[in-house]
Image: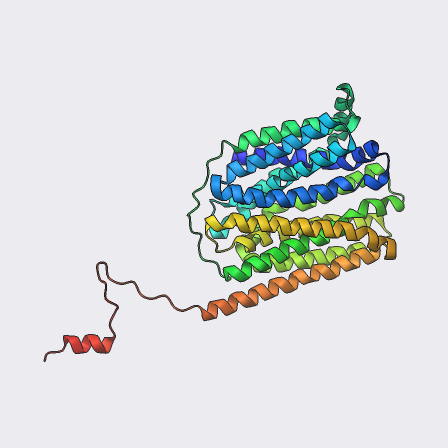
Amino acid sequence: MIPLRIASLLGGFAQSLGGAAAALLARDLGGSDAVAGLPQALLVVGSAVAALGMSALTRRFGRPAALAAGMAVATGGSVVVVVAGDLLGLLAGTVLLGAGTAAVMLARYAAADGAPEGQRGRAMAGVLVATTVGAVAGPNLLVPSDALGRALGLPGLAGAYVVAALCFAGSAALLLVLPARPADVEPAPSAVAPGGTAVRGLAVLALANLVMVGVMTMAPVHLHHLGVGLGAIGLVVSLHIAGMFAPAPLSGRLTDRWGPVPAAALAGAVLTGSALLAAAGAGAPIVLSGALVLLGVGWNLGLVAGSTLLTAGVPAAQRPGREGWGEVAMGVAAGGGGAASGAVVSGGGYGLLASAGAAVAALVVGVAWRAGVSGRSAGRRAPAPSPPRPRGSSAAPSSPARRGAAGSPR
């Protein structure tokens, strides 16, 4: 478990450092702000494709090998960015870096593989906390990474990808020492029907990510328009990232104790409240900053509860496919939320964007409620289990009347 957590820390660090440098480096290499958003869009595409590929690898070679492959591909993507030294190389490398993003996010399931059904939330939380440390630290090392790049004769911010390559490679090496879990271990039965659970788990993950990315994408720009300095904006972003991952132990405990359905409903309520607070405090930087931290907390609870719903009551061999589609749903939602946020703010302001986020977040509560209703209905329809037959007997149990007749004297 310790190698997995260290690998998650290194992967989270490399992911966040490269992500923080991508837009700035694209602007420097392309000479225009118009291309600054391209790396993020391609990262989402690369992550979605890689998630499906890694799910297939997991079924064939085991989860550690699949995660290590994703980290290795991301290492190659970092090298492409460094060696090419131009915008095309940055964009091509960013697609490959998406495999690292997918591996970092899928690592939470590796922790849950060996845990009983009622403890999977807490198992995921340990990995998410390790990811937090790396993800929060990464953006704060842009300055020394820039200095490293210049010392190596590279475009300054390309130094971030030198560091990212080393961290991704180290993460891949650690993942390879992990034992593969047997794929035929049956989890404990879930209180919710597996088929409906998968759809609702996907919905919770996608909607929570849509709200978080949509509301957060334009927050730095809006804060800048309010006169907030770059240093303070960076601090707000770091606090938001901490809110996204640091509450994972609490989210895991709530999910395991209450069940994923009530936890998902609470996540929807927190996301709705944080978005409404962001809308109400759109003109007050302090209020908006607090809302963005709370937004991260709601997303974290939605991530843990949605991930648990997605794989509840499913044999281990069938989980990787669902997990891959979960990452695809989150990636599509992130791409849509990020793309729409700018247009909404341009047309109606940041308050309108946050209000729209609150409306979408309320759907999470509805999805959770429907999951609870379906689970209770499935429980009422489930037939009572048949009593076990005596060992060695092949005949069905006879009725009391028949047993009496058979045993009565003629």
